[in-house]
Amino acid sequence: RNWTKQNLNDFVNACATYGRDDLETIKNEVTDQSPEEVERYYHTFWPEGYLQLKDAKRIISKIEKGEKKLAAIEADREALAAKIARHKKPLQTLSLPYPNNTS
Image (cartoon, rainbow, N blue to C red; front, side):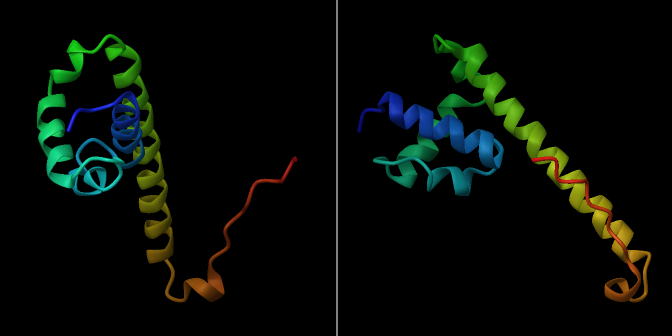
């Protein structure tokens, strides 16, 4: 089945949301394409197939921005897990300051 612009957008959004290495999730995010077809496209797109696209810079920039966001979330999770691990009874002794809501 031919890929549409919407299929490409779904693919790029999935790569940005879940990271380019999460093929199993990406395969389920592209509408109107089978998981097998998405996997085939994935292996054509990476590592350099996307360079053939007219909007290659914009596309890779969007994916990298999403991956940076994922990395920041993971760093926050790791920092929180480390903070929790320092307490014997975190529910009773741990305080987590929250920023003021300015909205």
